[in-house]
Image 1 (cartoon, rainbow, N blue to C red):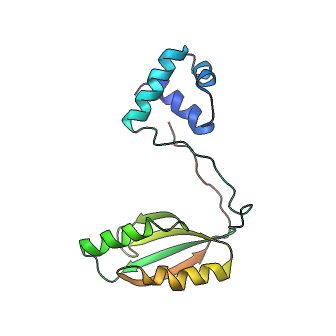
Image 2: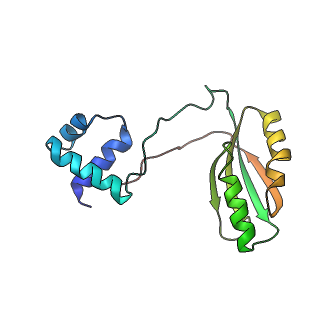
Length: 150
C-alpha cells in the first residue's frame, strides 16, 4: 500500500458516496488506474464495505448503554455459543472480548429505559455462560466512528 492508496482510503472514509470520477479527481489519477486501485483495495480486505451513517435518536433509538459481561464458564464451546448469539442481536451495536474481568463489553441501543430493561431481562440475562451483567448509561458520545489515521 502506497501513499496514493492511503489517499483513496482517506477520501472514501470522509465520503463513501464519491463517484469513481470524483474519487479519481481528488487523488489525481485517471479513471482506469483509480478503478484498478479501488478494486485491489476491496479485494485485499482493506475496504470491507460501504454504508450510510444513521442518527439513532432521530430513528427513536435514543437510549444507549454499555454492558459489561462476566462469564461463568470460559470454555471454548460456551464462548463460541455466546459470541454466535450476540452476533445475531441487532440491538448490540458493538461487542468486544476483553482481557481480564469483565470478559466482554457490549454497546447496546434501545428505544428507552423500559425497552432496555426488557431487553436486559429477557435477552441478555439468558445468553449462554453469563454469570454477571453490569451496565452503565452513556451520558454523551464525544467521539464516534472516527476515520482511521492513515
